[in-house]
Structure formats: C-alpha cells, structure tokens
Image (cartoon, rainbow, N blue to C red):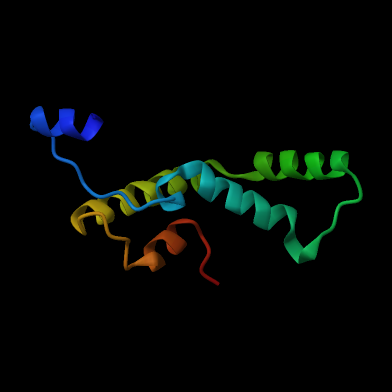
Length: 102
C-alpha cells in the first residue's frame, strides 16, 4: 500500500538492503562500546559490573567519534543511493573515519 501510494505521488524509491546496520548510527556506536567493554576478552562476574563497564564505555566515546559515526552513516547512504541500493565497496573510508586503522 505504501509503495503504491509513493509511486502514484511520483516519489522515487530505491531498494534498501535488509538489516542495514551501516545505515544506523547506533549500531556503529554499540559495536564500538562492545569492543571497549570486551577488550582483551574481559569477562564480567555480575550484571552490575557489566552495566558499569557499558556506562563507562559510553561516557568514553569522544565527540569526534560520534561525529565521525554520523559522517560514516551518511557516506554509506550516499554510496548505496549511487549504487542503486548496493553496498559501499570502500569500507576503508568508514574505517578511517571511525579511527580503526592500525
């Protein structure tokens, strides 16, 4: 019904890859929090210590990281649009923006 309406209204649509965490900034942020929390294969003995670790990881995310995450999501969306719904072939840019190059 929604697609029918959009087409009748002259609105263009693109195919959207299913389950697209690259288009969702919170997914990239949670991935970084997970890397921080479980660094060096850390194991937590209680829910409270895990909660504290997640809170500390969240608080440690820099404003630059947050801004770069939004830029990376924007980049992924633009590339997907240019590729008519396809994925970015240049994951290196996203890695550089998020500071993951060793």
